[in-house]
Length: 232
Image 1: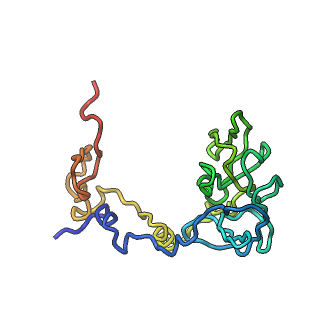
Image 2: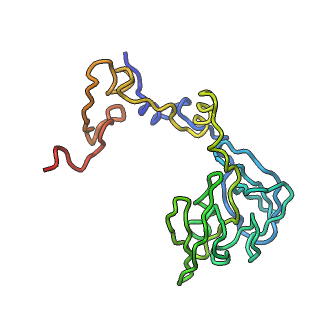
Image 3: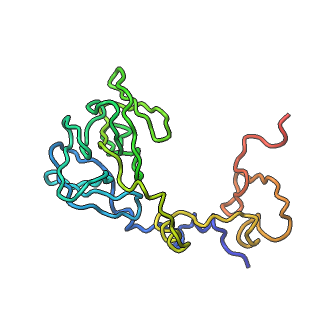
């Protein structure tokens, strides 16, 4: 008797294929008010690649990715015009050539872009109609509203990708925490009970067109292609 293939099991959402809810207890967002905030704690979050800052502004507590050389008890400014690592300013108030991260896509959304460890964007130029141009880590230029907020500096943990996992077990538990499928195995290397492409026979691979209404277990190969056959 066969069993659920991986794509079915992941879609079913069993405990095997489920992210730890406690990993995502910290939500990155900016505070509503403005003023001087104090860093209360630097936190390790399993769901994020960078350490997080727990900061307090008045009675409001918020979490953002930590910047290089941050420490507990440090003061950071939310709003204003002071140019200093860790300060949270509107893009229109940040000078050209500054490094920024945790950038809002729309004003007030709390920061959605550039949040991985060691990453940053560069303020390229100020444009008309309150627009600001930023150079992303992939060297592409993206235009934002000048009222979007960002944090000055570079995100901590830049050497993360240089440190190897050393053991498969460490990699397994890291990927499991974030609900990532690992290790990824080619379908033709599986047994027939694990995947429609599996078994030891017939490994001359041909493209397979999955039906549009195919169930999860059979939805493998080319999914809903626009056309089939050889192009003439």
